[in-house]
Amino acid sequence: MEAQPPFQQSQILQNSVVVFSKNYLPLARINIKRAIVLLVTGQAELLNFGTTKQWEVRSPSVVLQVPEHIRLTVGNPERHWKVPPVNRREVLRRDNHTCQYCGSTKHLTLDHVIPRSKGGQHTWDNVVTACERCNSTKSDRLPHEAGMVLKTKPKAPIHPAVAFAEQFWNSQRLTEAE
Image (tube, rainbow, N blue to C red; front, side, top):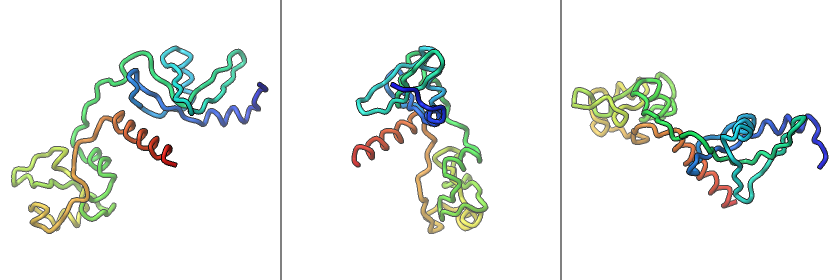
C-alpha cells in the first residue's frame, strides 16, 4: 500500500469515532486523535460491525487502523451522574431556549406549571421555560384555567450517555432504511 500524502492524513484526523462501553452501550462520539490514544494505550479495542469504515493513520514508526467504532476495555464509563439541579440555565437548556406555551425564543422566564401558591413544587416535572407574555397571561393559574397548552411535558434530563445511545441507534435505523 502506498503512503498517503500529508493533506490526506490531516483530513483523516477530522473524522470521529463512536465509543462504546464495556457492555456495548454507545457512549459518545470522539475525535479520531482521542480514539488513537485510547487504542494505543490499551484502554479501547477495535469493534467491527461488518460494514464499518476504517482509517489508516501513520506515524514514522507505526501504521494504525482506526475503525469507526471502538469499545472501552477499562474503567467504568457508566460513572455516577447526578441529575442537574433545577435552575434557570438547566431548564432553558432542557427546553431548548423556547417558550413551552407559544414557542417564542425572546424574553424567557421560568414558569411553575402548577403555581407554588397551589402546592406546585420547584421540580423538573413542574418548571418550564415561558416567555414573559405567556407567564403573565397564565399568571397564578393552571394552564387549562388560562386556556394554555404545554408543547412538551416537562421531565428531568436523562443521562448524557443514554441520550447519545438513543440518538446513535435512531441514526443507525435511518441509515439502514436508506
